[in-house]
Image (tube, rainbow, N blue to C red; front, top):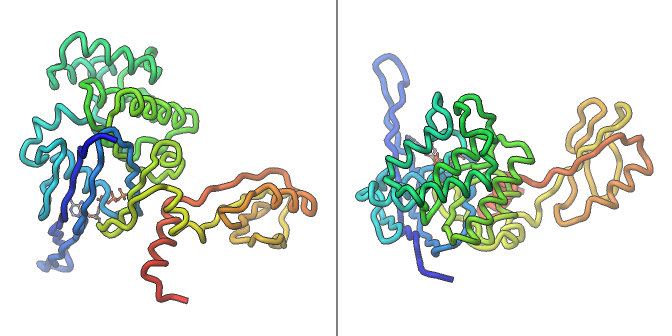
Amino acid sequence: MGDEFIRLDEVEKVFDVRRKTGFMRRERREVRAVDSLSFSVRRGEMVGYIGPNGAGKSTTIKMLTGILTPSGGRVRVAGIDPSRERARLAQRMGVVFGQRTTLWWDLPLIDSYRLMRRMYRIEERRYEENLARCVELLELGDLLDAPVRQLSLGQRMRGDIAAALLHDPEVLYLDEPTIGLDVVSKVKVRGFLRDLNAEHGTTVLLTTHDLTDIEQLCRRVMVIDHGKLMYDGELEGLHATGGAAAERTLVVDLERELPPLDVEFARVVKVEGARQWLAFPAGQSAAPLVARIAERYPMVDLSVREPDIEAVIARMYARDTSVAP
Ligand SMILES: Nc1ncnc2c1ncn2[C@@H]1O[C@H](COP(=O)(O)OP(=O)(O)OP(=O)(O)O)[C@@H](O)[C@H]1O
């Protein structure tokens, strides 16, 4: 399935952190954000890169883009050392940080794109073609003349993704591209990324806290925790490794406050007024459970919550290192 495009060998990143601990006193501490990290990604792959907060995901992406220099080990993207040849690599990669925008806040969206065209020296025809494709598929037509600060989060995110793609990058790094988006925007963004990968063979590394992003986009997932690679394989395998014990949650709204519900194969984990949260095994269908509750209790509404990545990983990690009961 194509050749190796990204390669990390025994990569480390250590931050020196100084903290004020009192008057004239400072403590010096090392934070090992990335620790002996090795993996490779083939051209055209779409890989999920997940892990709990502070696991080292953003640090990895910053090393891949050349923003940060590794403290040890070797990083190569398209055979290039990112921290040494950042400008050369910039032509071949696109980056989207969900929590930050690369667009000019006060300018109309289209002006940001024109500026990018000059920055990346994109040839006119290619720029026009790429812009037209992004405008159509990301539905940006009505937004081009609006200043970025007036856009909703979902609109801005679509604008940011387009900005990252105007120069036809071979690799796209996405750091939380669906964070804070409503369901409709998430669906649009995911659909666009899926097509981009399928039609253009763009290599994608996707960091997210939303397991659905991974489920719908990536066959392969890598899990990082405490800077180390904990898992590299198919998503199903991740569920089997850490998620077998994972639970889904049924959130039930009752007509009135009641004592914790007594239902087979589920246990109440939280009660708040007339709302109760019931945990049940992730591998089990929610339908019989819902039927049983509806039969016996005055239920007015319900929703099912998937185990989030944090929970799946926490369980996996607990299993690997578990000495607890
Ligand atoms: N510039 C920095 N200086 C000092 N410590 C840092 C710096 N950047 C990151 N860290 C630390 O390195 C560790 C990894 O951080 P990183 O941002 O890579 O995690 P993450 O997996 O992206 O987390 P999140 O999901 O919260 O974004 C954390 O302990 C963080 O506090």
